[in-house]
Image (cartoon, one colour):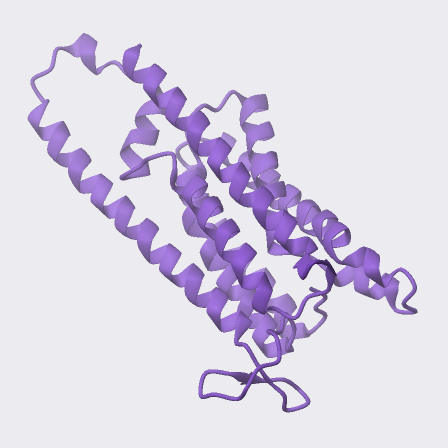
Length: 268
């Protein structure tokens, strides 16, 4: 949705700054990760713009403010699609084989929560009009609406907690297994550097966290769109629901592909 307020812009920059600071800690281990992060950032912005134009922006063609609307409009769904594509292309070009999605599964919810705080302050991305309750929000005209932004912030907060728990659980189990296998012969311990890093840092369900996030967020967003005040093009559906299904489908495809690659690695 379009957003032009200063708080929104500052929160967006804060989110980028926080993720860049956190990602810089990983760059010390492999300089290629910086290029991967920048590819994700640029392609996420591009995807956010293109999907917004396809889902909603085209509807403002006859609006006198269309250029301002098109310049400021963007969508999280497009950022997820574009960012994923950018990371995969960058990794292929750099020959980086380890999974990076487990890190992005932590970065994405934090960035989205900060962005939604900006939406809350700006008054955009509203929910549908509904009967007033203690949990409803009132818009600038005092109309009670479904709390779309807080609900999405809550979803991402839960997602962040889940992936942190998976990461902690995986690290503890990895420590136990490494302690029990300390007497393995040297030739059995020779691992590819990228694959070893993935095992150490991924946690439980390593390499699949971001795929799980894409599936969860895509399905959540598809259902949540029915309660959001976004333009509908037919049968009560929105363009964002198509994008949400694409996000969930991308997560399923990535999950299956990663699982197959991991099985091949075990057999090898």
